[in-house]
Image (cartoon, rainbow, N blue to C red; front, top):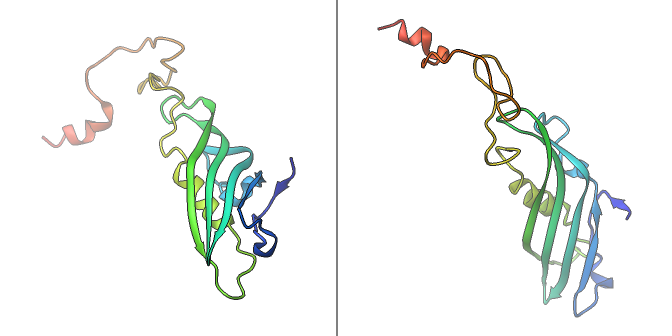
Length: 158
């Protein structure tokens, strides 16, 4: 499958009954190069039905992006998929706008479904706050003091 940089629709060549557009956009459109938590794996896949209704272009379908994520609890890397199963937009077609670019709308839709707090699994125990051991793989040998040392400076103000 060829990866595209933009998804532009040629209104003049669009089937009057509408047609399916399937393909892959470059993950560079997501602009996640500086993210330390989310890294796209492969391109952004789309499966869209596009139809011209009068002066309105109606687009419906599915968007999917594979991601390598860093779990915010245990710092392990895992893969997941961000999916928008009901992507729907409408674009008003005006004179001179015979080649609407859907790339910005697709980018926005997939960014809205990206995990804001990626966790490898719901039962992830995270890291020990004292020694840093991954509690999913081992028990820590720290002594539980019952106090959170991060508040020590405030406790001293009493």
